[in-house]
Length: 406
Image (tube, rainbow, N blue to C red; front, side, top):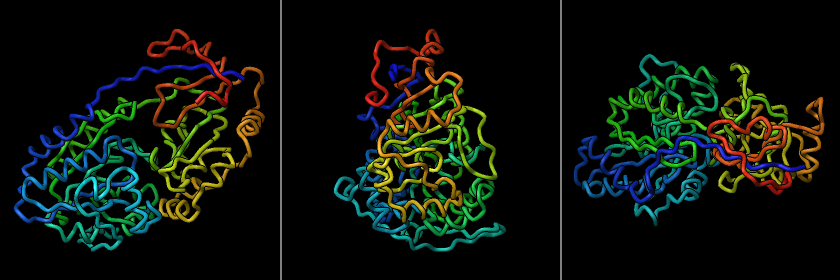
């Protein structure tokens, strides 16, 4: 079976890599950090595969140093890295955030202090190293959340809670399911801003090509308002699949560096959260996963959103890390193991047989690299006929066998 190459043209505002440091410095300069000589400043950053994250962290470190401060890095993660100090350090290092590159120590610990919770129903925690510092700068990407939708989703506000609060805070919030994520993250973040000596939030927005599009540094009082506005921009510039109904979606790779859930539910139209409605579109009958990314470190959360995985995926699963992440999230179905096949052709055969197709010779198949990279995809003949002539879409003069396409 042949697949045909299709190019989707998404808006592409971007900051060149060579300009990243200058942009970060300019933004931080506008925050009036008031760092004094000898101040110990925590730089909190997380586990997502954010474009240029090591450069952004390094630029932040350098700015604090030049102001006379003594910066250090803390992993702002909940259950990621297997919920161990060593694992979380390794996750940062896998993204180039190392002590040798940044020139400052990484202080990785799951130890937290308890902040006043006032009238909140949940406990409020903060990384002990960050709390004991003279101030903390939190860095994160603003993006659409994989579990729920609202004015605040994934970003600096969430990082203040689930990231800076470490595993204890992740458990405390996730115990409430999506209610905790929707209703308790904003007020919990406000508590951290009130009691945690936060100096600034550095927010990153990416374009549809997984490139740095916007970097902003916000004063604590501005974080919530500005993040709401940035999230609207992100939603307006999200990539997507070009059709609403697909028989089989083949995904080359998934993992924690692709999405917090391994593959983005907003792209595939599946959430598998009992308290949340499933998206109406895209409507995909069968999803097959071919590989787990190296940078996921065996964490295969999200495999339960698919129907079929290869033996290669199965043999690379770290079940302890996966289940810790899944149980912490409370959405257990996302960690269920799909059908395991020894080779891709068997998987495609199973997928097509499960579709109940009226025309078995003309299936609607799409193959993508991952749920981040959707500018170049491969589609079957049935979709070529549908996509030709569409604006911002070009069907290229290139075809390959279904499993030689990516």
